[in-house]
Image 1: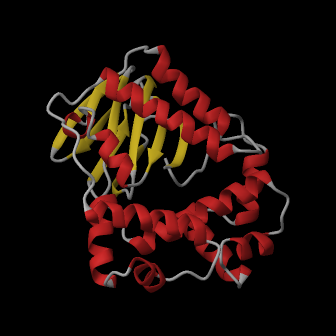
Image 2: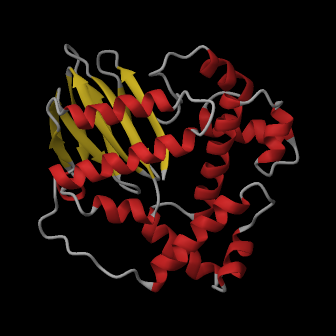
Length: 270
């Protein structure tokens, strides 16, 4: 599932991290240069390179002082995303060279354009994401990867993700999800975090905030109604949580999206 995309024209020496992310992100360098640090390795990157950030891993990246980079990114979460990426060489190499590949670049461009849609945004963006994953698997295959049967744990997580999608607007708790699946709460927490890199509580919060962002961008609903639509009875508490996650208030977020260019996106998710 897609959870973020964007574009950044970095200032000299602009840096991000050290930080842990709760999803997979692929950054594609359009111009300039910079460095990426992950798993104790240092990569020096230039235009045409792409680098993968994996959930739960400490990373750092920085634009060059003299030729700062411009890049786009696509972020995704979920157990199936992990399995799809494992069909590629990216999780092992972390860095690959896209070059000027027109198909991969088109996915990044179309994703940014789709992010501005007012109707069926999620359907279009996820269709582009699956095309992107297919291209990665074709162009950068993991030669040692063999398809595996889905385990019971993976099925539980898929069901948990589906339940969250269906009930995020309700006052849903982790115990509710565990009860629905017939699982011990601690066991569910353990397998969910191992598979997605995020706790189920963190994932639920992120999912609600993403849905709130969609409503703020594509509707004229009041902040109070948006809050209620993603399970928050108290709009002030919702606004406080939203600000913590996004870096700006819901009203400010709506204004920024209304005035944004097609390639601008959420400031707190790059």
